[in-house]
Structures are given as structure tokens and as C-alpha cells.
Image (cartoon, rainbow, N blue to C red; front, side):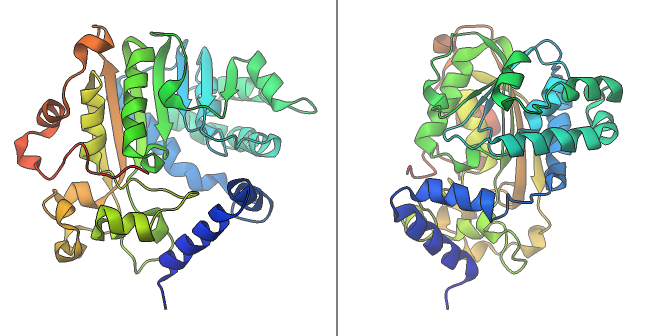
Length: 341
């Protein structure tokens, strides 16, 4: 019998092949699946890791213009950043997922946990509560209420071709999004981020780099998808409605540098398995020589700053980017290390 993750991929492929399959899948997740009674406490890691990113980058939110790549289903970070005093926030996504009930759930979660969140983000709990209470839509459309507070929802949007004015944003950020984007689109996203950031503006990314098909299955390591070559993984691991690029942290770092930004801080957060649990003999040759932290990493926190010069004058080649990020001793990385969808 096929392992559970293989059966999951087959189900994704069947649903994705149906007319309107992606919309059907979204409807199922909200109405009957994991999003119906989703416990936002499961996003607690984000409330710990994003403050780490802010501190590492020495970034502040008060009075800043922010844009999010991949707003997803629950706008937790936009709510938190609004509470921290962001002047404006644009939430973007390739698909339109946000719904009234999910927005309301997110606001209520933050209000219920205001004291805990305030301690994590070093903010005044009373101020957070006032600002978050103003985001309650009540009987109004959440879109209208949020737009009146400076938060807009731009979806569907291809972030790589956002159409936003150059040098119009202070912070570009994402959470558990870039790992689902093909490499060719990642390059466009990195270049567009550099273009729209003001000089000195920052990119803050919390990237999941583990195989999420292994989630909830203790017998399967988070690096399971690194066992396969590109062609085989495309055949057995990816589908229209669930795609993983398998990029390792060094790939994201090099893309950022290649686009004309400077890395100011990064952190590898490892999963529960250690180097003693890593069996390199089963890995695809392209991944075998990578350092253990590149293979075992669970979340990669990356903070970069746009240089003062214009993006066109700071962009460098992929090979130079690789050299600047980690040097030639990490030769297991190439800028084309992941096939495009």
C-alpha cells in the first residue's frame, strides 16, 4: 500500500483535475475540513518567530507601510501589525481566501490573548485592545471596516507583477508562503520586493522549509521530500492544488542577495530530529552534501535590507550571490536547484 503522504497527493491530483477543483477544495476546507474550527493557538510559533525577525532586523512597525505576500486564511500578522501601529498594510495573495468569519475569528483570538501577545511583541496591551477592537466588523463588511483603518486586501494578485509604485513600501513580509512558490516566481517576487521597497526598507520572511506532507506522521522525517530528484518529485509529490518547491534556506538567501538586497539577520530553526537521525544515504545527490542545518531546518527566518542604490544597479549574478551568502564551501546549492511548475 502507498504511504499516507502518497495517497494524500493522489487525492489532491484528483480534486485538482476536476472542473473548479481548486475552489471546491477551498470550500471543503472551510466548511468541513481543518479550517472549520481551526485553533489559532496552533499559530503560536508565528507569534514567537516574527518578533525574533523584528529584533534581528532591528525593524519597527509604528508608522510604517507594509505589504504581505500570501495573506492565506487567517490574517493574524496584519492584525498584530495594525495593533503595533502600522500606518498601512496591503494583504496580497494569488487566490482570494479571506472570509468574514475567518477575519472575525482572528480578531477575537487576538483580543482574547492580548496580554500574551503584548508581551511577545513588546507592546502595550491596552493599546493593542483598542486598535484591535476597531477591526471588529460587526454587521458591516470586514473589507470596508479594515480599509477605513488602512488595511486593504489585494487578491488575486501576482506579487511578482504587483503594479505598485517603486519605493512605496517600508516592509515586505511573508509567513509560510514562499515554500509553495515555484523558483521562477520566487525570482520575480525577490526582484519586485526590491523594486517597491524604499531605500533602507526591509524584507522579513518566516519560511517553512520542511515537507508538510509529513506533518502529523512521526515515522516520516521533515526532510522526506529531499529523497527524490526533481522529475520524480514532480511526478509523485506535487499537484495543482499543493506544490512545494523544496528550496533550502541558502537558496532563499541567495535569491534575496541576487535581487539587490543585503541580508542583515537570519536563523535556522530546526525540527525535532537531530543530525543523528539524518540518513544522508537516502537523499537525492543534490542534497547529500548540504550542511545538516540546511537539511534539518524547519523554519528559516530571513531579514534583508534594500540598499540605498537603485535596484537595477545593485542586482548581481546568481553565482556572485551564492558566494556572498555562504561562500564556495556550500557548493551543493545552485540557483536552479528546484524545478519550476
